[in-house]
Length: 489
Image (cartoon, rainbow, N blue to C red; front, side, top):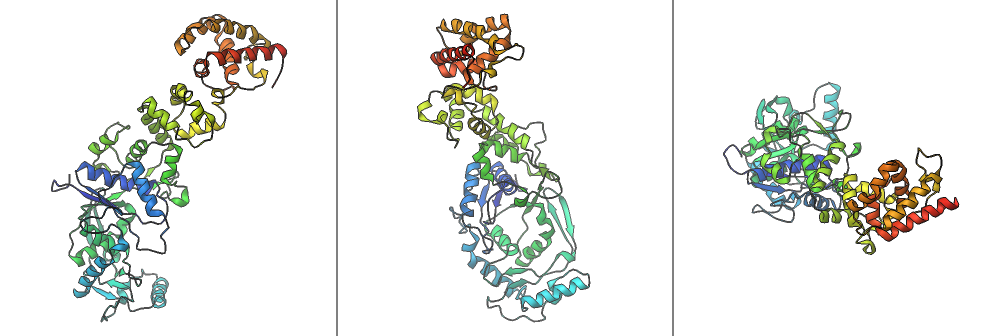
């Protein structure tokens, strides 16, 4: 719970500048989990005040990403709150009102300089090897702001700031971190520095969760809070998600994937939520597999780690397999049918075939993309079509030649013809005594190849159950004929 034992209000506030990747989604998840943990409110706010960087369709992508992961927001771009729209470009009068308050307090002024003049100040500071601070060039008197020039903060007090961070503890920065930052740009849109503070206050946000790269800017934020007379929220700095080499934060240029690509590959939303929760947060136990409900119950912002975390693809695959194992056979079948691969096994014509393969496929894959690859490689073609293969593939490694397999296959035909119940266990009861007598490899290898036409395939009993008795006997007879005539196809 919050310090006053009250429900927390958190927000996820992305800019619509492209696709969502795991860094942003992890921030959304932590904010969501803590709001739910405390019985609070989770807000999706769209920070679209930088119109030059906005990418068409990004807001829909953000919403789709959160919807896939089940991170339901209480207020958002399609759910206005009691404070109005959750889209910053639709909140401009609110920022103007707060800006006017600062002007009346003598704490904001119009920037009197041209961009060229400011660049000259910056170049002079660089030549003198000192940091550029706009406040060093603050005019002695201010003209009225007519909205055509940027509006800047007049830092209310040049001082050292010390503040508390729920993850990092006590942090501090000196006066050199403070400057007369732009509040409202010449185009009428607020800067991030100003807008997020106004919005968080208006929306009652109690906990701000964001990347630790914002720590360096926090003193500037605090000076704006002070100028507005707004109490500080609780700052929760999240550790970065790093590249494999741990040298820098993982970004889009470093191969960070669109979060919805994971959906396309067949990762379950519960698995992705489980994985992202464990990327930079530690429950304090050895537990790694969490249901969504368990995560909400366990999430504690004080167990968020300080050190950066690397995306562990193997751990994600493992978690996905664990979550897949919790699906019923019917749900797992529906999951497989979401594949976009064009293969007859997925068609209505073979609706009765795929269910028989569910137990085998469940054992063999960790994510649906592996099933897709197997389909494209022809691994399951045996289920829908008569296999073709060179008779040399029937050769068991201990046999002198492929002809040695002929009497074994003929014997299998005799045994299987007598089968009255065509089930996995019943077939094992028929075949295995003979295989143990002659040699398991000597019998099971040519049996499996005759049925599948492949060196790698499901076990022969699964193959027989899948294709049925008639097809099994037909394929064995075909293999015998091929060996007998030494024909190849």
